[in-house]
Image 1: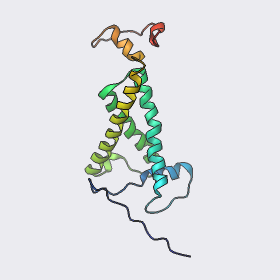
Image 2: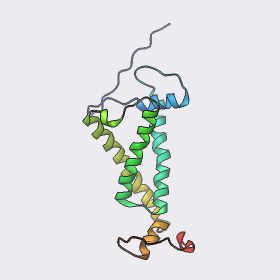
Image 3: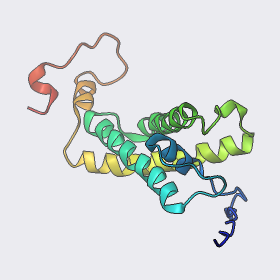
Image 4: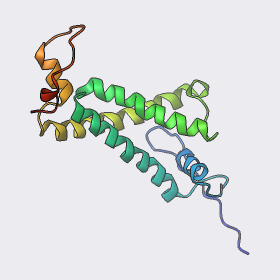
Length: 161
């Protein structure tokens, strides 16, 4: 039987940070796949990484269609993206809570998720804008500005009737 050569993790040129294999470890635990020590197969890593991004992108699209759009909605979505990772990583025992991470890791991870969230938001907002304002935006247009106790839109106006 031949020995399989160890694959070294690559360092990212800009940050010097090693490639993360956490997504592959999470998907292996979620699906019951056998676990492997060390570097994980790139296709498994990408499947989890991009799969999560695609599924959560649907949520950002729903936000845009309903009304929350723009930078504030994208900032809120950044928190959703970070929270999703932390739930999966901590629930499977693959990751530890962010307060235990080195600060540089926190900054890099948050920056990566923010870039994803704001890019996804820009695309989702542009696509949603083609359909006109969402119900939340129509509600806000009834009384522009900040007001408490605005009450709901009449049902017939909620979905662009």
